[in-house]
Length: 396
Image (cartoon, rainbow, N blue to C red; front, top):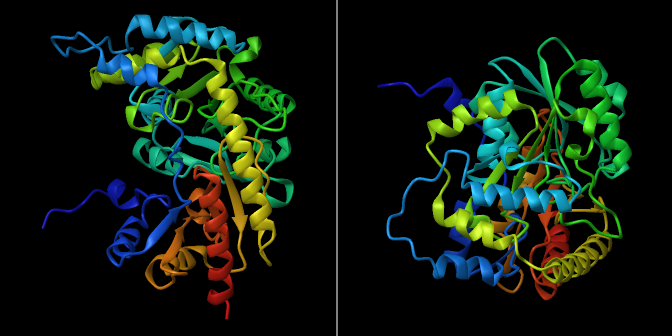
């Protein structure tokens, strides 16, 4: 019998999606599930994006440029400029989601066996992208006790070797909701320049910041031009997860030229989705003001609810729409399965993402879960109530 590749065997399961079969079976039993496991916003996609696709006059659905439509890239550059990110259209490659942008970045800057340092916990799919690229992730642990703030720079310095090609961050963070300060970003910039490595920032949650805090981009540091690679996406910003449009942004011409070879190999990003994404750039600020207010209220409800449960510790997010909660259980993976397989409260249950999959250090985060506060407020209140009952029953 032919053998599967070692790379395929090593490819990790998604901690966000691996419980789906258990959820499907629970639904077949007639259970209602409050899905706190996945960052799929329930906010409506801007109508002008949907209308742009609906009202198109395309007669031949042709390839676009491998870098994406020039008109879209120009308009995207204007958007970035307004956000104090001075880039041009030729600094941008449109990708099939932020995921492809990360794959292009890893493929462009690292060879098999090279290393990328990432503060953990981190977006779980970084593990998968690294496996696919033959890259080794070197984790530096951030802790719930410090709200997942940037670990001391000395911890990064200890890990840098001749194999280190980059530091990768997510800002604001998935799964922690942590928003890096300008000072923290500048500290990372200094270490990248000192060791002549790349600083890669996944900034897809840029708009989602709370409590009067502002996002600071790595692309706003002029001296970092040759070392900075930004990853972005329309998925969360415009509640367009299904569009699968992202981009890779860098002022380093060699990075762009190399990434373009990967872009050419997959031909082009999808056309209708680029049309929708270009139209979405005209979304008024009022849309984001309303969304931020809604998410702030949801965050406050969730955090207050979780803090009311005995034995639960929760990090308070300043951005994105996730938080990490530490539960009074020994294994959150087993608990998450139990919630779907055996437990219900008035025929309802909740689905969470075990946080161990957001770490690359073995046996770390075993009692933590990631919770996405993307449900309406009444559902969040109910979900926390169910979780409280579940923990009490589980620990009897």
